[in-house]
Image (cartoon, rainbow, N blue to C red; front, side, top):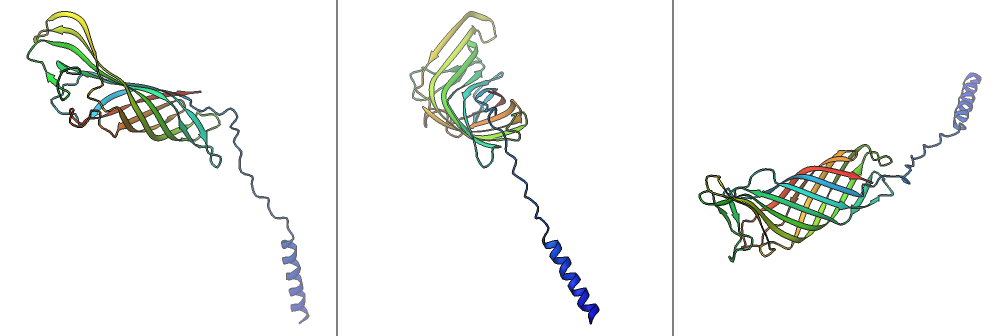
Length: 241
């Protein structure tokens, strides 16, 4: 009985001793110094431009391109500095190239005409350019927000309003390709185009270089004014500051 009592007292003293150990201090959450954080204020984009839903009768050719520039304000989340919201103004332009096609931007017609002229005299090069004032809004992720040199991704929307639409035709030639007159003809009109547009975008990359893709949800042309094409572009983004 004495042995049992002794063992019980010893066990109780042992438990009490361990219970008096100082509890471990929880690790403090790492605080990221954001004072010199690169915010990617400037975005420059260069890419290939195309039209989704383009009829086969439209003879586009060459490397149509998209050139965009934005100045963005970036606001990191207090709860997670790797995430941020960004928005700001910018200019976006698409330059679509055509082959042996009359782009009737100023024709006195009710619809926008794209006329194949391969069997008659034509311009060797025709470009249709549209320029928009845009306001993108992005949700951004940066794996290393302190230096801005790690993996980055962004997704967002762009709201734009049409500033100008014009064509540039150069090198008038015969149907066989013989040059008739080396001159340039320019025309400008916004009559057939929707004045506003809404686009979606996504970017993914590393450091200051990333790939981007953009797709316009609204139609380029007004209802009943021509083919209901939706512009898109794919290219690279250079970011900084």
